[in-house]
Length: 264
Length: 264
Image (cartoon, rainbow over all chains, first blue to last red; front, side, top):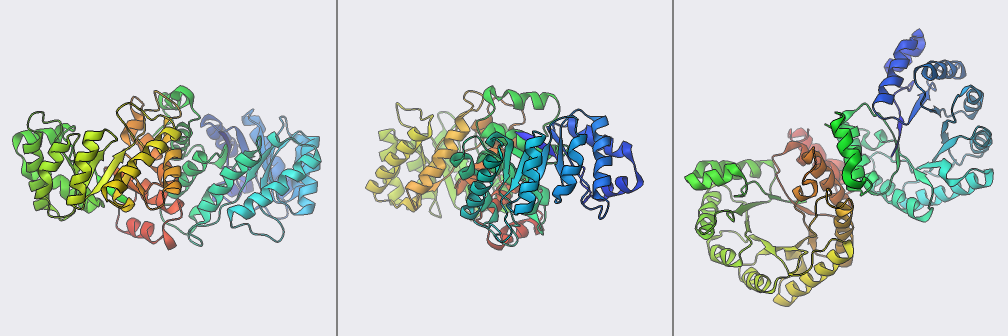
């Protein structure tokens, strides 16, 4: 399981505040906490800083690279912002994200090849909201074609099937789960990842719902997640799910995490 | 999800103590707690009372039937004990359990037909320990044939694929999960149930592992569980898993459980 630590996101109040006040120590602490909690990549997002996203994203990257040697996951809806910051990175990053929207797709893929970056691909096009597993797998196939055509390997692609709120459609989680299982089976070598929080939008006990969804995703084949590794119950659910899925030989990862005090 | 409350089991020290001392009030309190927590059946087991199982099982049944109107699940490895107590039951019970061992199978099925009982069938024969999904599904098919031949309907059968400890075989949970999915697809109308605790034998954080396994089972199609409904985290995981599995329309069951204070 590859964990992309999601905490340094300008949509969170505390992060927006730290960006606005230039509180470098706070950002660095957020990076360190996630690194210690098991993150493999640190996501950085300044998209809420309208009009100054590029400048703020550069500041975030500089701060985080001083605090940890982990690779970063550059998170922006604007491919120009992504391209602008790639030359700064000390380690090959991940890019969050591409969709099938042609300009963004081409803009990001060319940069990904140049900087040997991994890419998160969302099952989303300009005109399709993929609500069914069928539609999600279809878009995944198109993403895979585009990535291959650009010269990246399947191992560099993390497909996010996108999950929609259960409050709107009771089968939305099931559609994402089925898509994960089919994508992992039908396109050997590709990875899947998923943002978790959308599933519980509008529901009570959201963390429980997100945790349960992550468990279900892992049991269906998910091999990466965009999440907060410092959420101990969530991290515990992840480790237990990997165990249940049969991917923790001799239960060693789980037992080690328990001994390290990371399991609650 | 049909919940079989497992607490009144003589393998638990407190229950064995209450049976030994004739503490009827304690047993009745255990029954009431489970009924309030959402149990659909109350399991009663006196199998640890060697030499006096039938007498103690009768005492348990009498006590529980005074305390709740819920149907009981008669839990014994000895089909003679099961047959001996069936005439006492006020409501059609469940029987826990049959295997493919011929004497037990025939003895229980004849009684089940006579008393309109539902039956839990374990994927276990005299000479096969079914470790793979394939072997479990094969035994499930044999159980189904036997149940049909005896004149019960598939709707009366709850198949337990049996899960073995992950500490012994890292893919044991995965085998049970695959069996659940295949049994539910290949034999429409049948039910599946599962005891949870075996999966975590010898591991730390057992409750987390059991909870995670239950979540995975439900997402793969499980529609009943033998469990402790008073374990709030376990019950919460169950409700969230039903939601994620797409079986809670408009999320009403989950929201109601939350409002009733049952979700943690």
